Amino acid sequence: MAELHVELVAADRKVWSGEASLVVARTTSGDIGVMAGHQPLLGVLEPGAVIIRTAGETGEGTVVAAVHGGFISFADDKMSLLAEVVELSDEIDVERAERALERAKSEDDAAAERRAEVRKRAVAVR
Figure 1: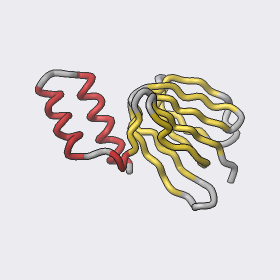
Figure 2 (figure 1 turned 120 degrees about the horizontal axis):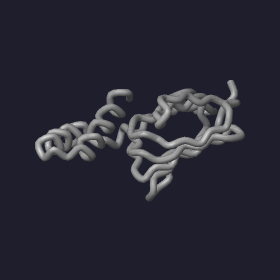
Figure 3 (figure 1 turned 135 degrees about the horizontal axis):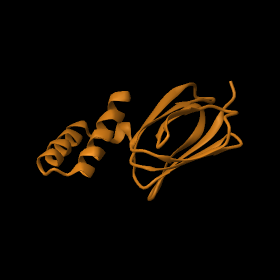
Figure 4 (figure 1 turned 120 degrees about the vertical axis):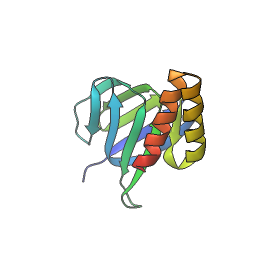
């Protein structure tokens, strides 16, 4: 199966890099799935889970990350996902995310509520 090279980058670190067979992300135009050979694209990421179906010598697996906005670009079987904040699902503390969600709701903080929901969804996908 053909592969694409993926770079998942936050403002402060390279979060993940490797070969993938499929990347699914939420953009302002809707959810998109990208495989090798896809048409070039440039888009704005909406907060949500990014799912990367990994490929290569280590076998197939899945990387799930909570992405809080950013950009996606794809050309020549190379994808870049750039965001200010990216959290891998296995780095997310579910109890902390639930507490943050409750606090955001009680303080009527829509932005914090959205971030907590994205974290919880990323863990649920995992």
